[in-house]
Length: 155
Image 1 (cartoon, rainbow, N blue to C red):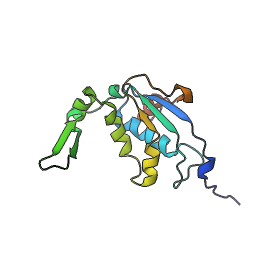
Image 2: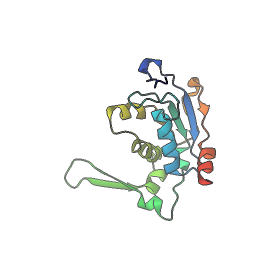
Image 3: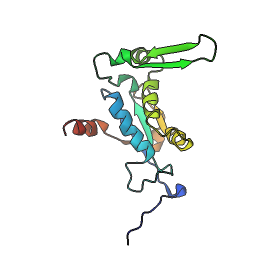
Image 4: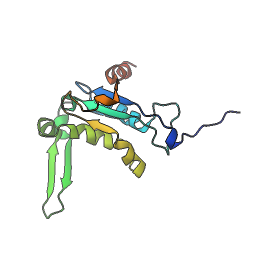
């Protein structure tokens, strides 16, 4: 008889992966990162346990937005809480601005579960605009999403 094994939180082994987002489409790279953060790439995936890995994204400012006007059409809105405080910024302005990593963070966050468990999983994402990151001590493995994305395009 086959049994489904449920992963226990204290037995989860976490790895560190580094992803170079240079010239990768934003949506495709974000969905692959969300899968790794959730742990869906592991054989012992359990939906109610945080069994995902840590992901470091470098060169987030060089991510590609496909489509004719997507950089201008993709607009993030927020409200300051004060009267007349509706603010907005386009993806093109944000990628050229002070915090270009927020575009990738927002795309991945919106693909995660909207629960306390999803917020805990999202904390394992580390996004940097340049190629430098302070996580060399964790010995991250390279996660080649470029090959995965290219393979999906040719199916």
